[in-house]
Image 1 (cartoon, rainbow, N blue to C red):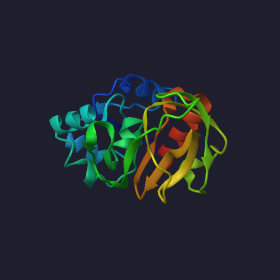
Image 2: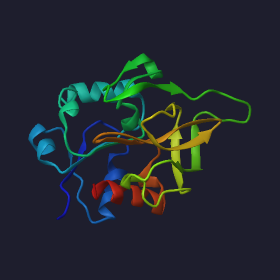
Image 3: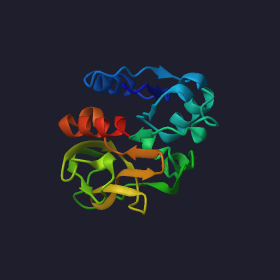
Image 4: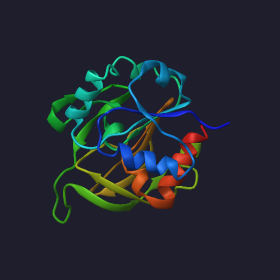
Length: 197
């Protein structure tokens, strides 16, 4: 059975590229803020590019703030979309969705460590959960200045100066700090793993 996938309208500039990544897998990925379409979907994506506060304001404006915590099907946040899943963010001291405990923090500046972090890093997977099947040591593409610390919810991590969470999960709520739509074979594998849940 083909998944019925929807992208939440978070206003991110990566909506088109995420749709294209799913199109390459033969899956339609309409953008919506319609509560009925979201509830009837089999899988939900929360994309995001830009600032946490701007994305949260867009979710408020689209009436999605109260709906998102009620989603029972698999939910995947991408990049800023992953950061919004946490309780809060250093970026603009933003209150986020609170679906995963913790605060997203600014990556610390260190000698030889450029912020924002832009580039390819390998994943260190610490789980047998199916979301991470085939991703051990895979190279994926990051563009960000904020990240979640490694915690009990971390399925995979990487390093840019310090270690941080690259993939997280709490129940049906999951997140990828990297951009699967820009991460080639590994990114496509993550999306396929998500759709198989």
